[in-house]
Amino acid sequence: MSNGLEDVVAAETILSDVDGLAGRLIIRGQPLDALTGYASYEQVLALLWDGFFADLPEDLTTPLANARAAVYRVVEREQSLLAELPVYDGVRAVMARLPDDTDLETALLLTAAPAVALPAAIRLQAGKRPRAPQLGLGHAADMLSMLGDVAADPAPAAALDSYLVTVVDHGLNASTFAARVVASTLAGLNSSALAALGALKGPRHGGALGPVLDMLDAIGTADKAAAWIENELANGRRLMGFGHRIYRVRDPRADVLKAALERLTRSGAVDTTRVELAQQVEAVALAALKRHKPDRVLATNVEFYPALLLETLGFPRSAFTAIFAASRIGGWIAHAREEAANGRLIRPKSLYVGPVPRVAA
Ligand code: COA
Image (cartoon, rainbow, N blue to C red; front, top):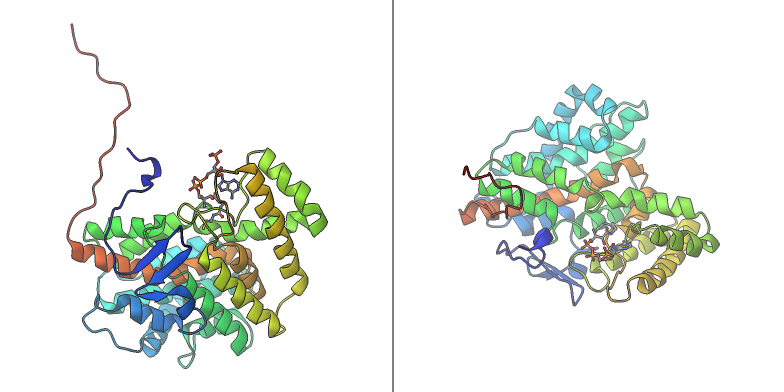
């Protein structure tokens, strides 16, 4: 038995490769740093979905914009749900209203769902009316336009696009595995997406983004970082934004997102004191983790800098995991299609360690 399925190879994929020793991520033949900042989310979707849908257009910008408009009609009907539920649960409820087929139209609607439901939920919970999507905008720019009261500037839209591209796919992580398990039963894409959404929610997966900011808030100023961190570790708590099951070096996504945050800083849109605090906390945390677990490399992971990036873009921390889902949905769909084409039901075994029935004398 392998606890946590560590080192178990459970799928062949052409979609992404995570090399934890070299700190390298390949998305369908492209190194991550050739995509982030260079390709749009729609272009990366087309790359990932190539071959999995018979009628896939080269440019998904307009089809995805049309899907956002269709999802907005669902959002308008579900306003009370989005106003009441936590953001993540509201997004999941809207998604559950969409079809459960395996065609391109379903894939586009599912991809549009978090991007549209999430800004609507944030606005409704702040007592504002949702804003409709705009056909002429790219996916990231439209998300910001639906969130804010005015159209987004190019720099924030580019930063959000960088985030969406960077976290779109990452090997056989927990949520992607959940999506593939469901797809192997030949259920529809929505069933896979909903299973994956459930897996992403936990703090050991996509739920660490908000707690990274909670940690910065609790620390307050750089001079308090060392004592606060030592106290956390001494009490057996984990530092959010550090450590990874696969990477034994720094997560390459942390670097490209740190660079995206720096680009945003140069555009003047960022509170630099907050970024400086984060950099100082990162340095103290890395040194403390090295002392705490000398045999294990615990480096900065993908959650640390995006937390600051998303905060700067105006998203409340309660929405962070849903934004992660708004990106990863593209990867889940590709993996679900790949797994369904494989044709073999995923059905591992368990080791029974419970009581055995008494044999009558
Ligand atoms: N802070 C403190 N200690 C940590 C740690 C962290 N962030 N991450 C791992 N450790 C410790 C573990 O407690 C474990 O100690 P133990 O052997 O005494 O129990 C040891 O390091 C080895 O852990 P590892 O096997 O590498 O962790 P994992 O593969 O089970 O978990 C994570 C990986 C991501 C779940 C884990 O690093 C974590 O919880 N990080 C914080 C949450 C986070 O940032 N999540 C986002 C992931 S992208």
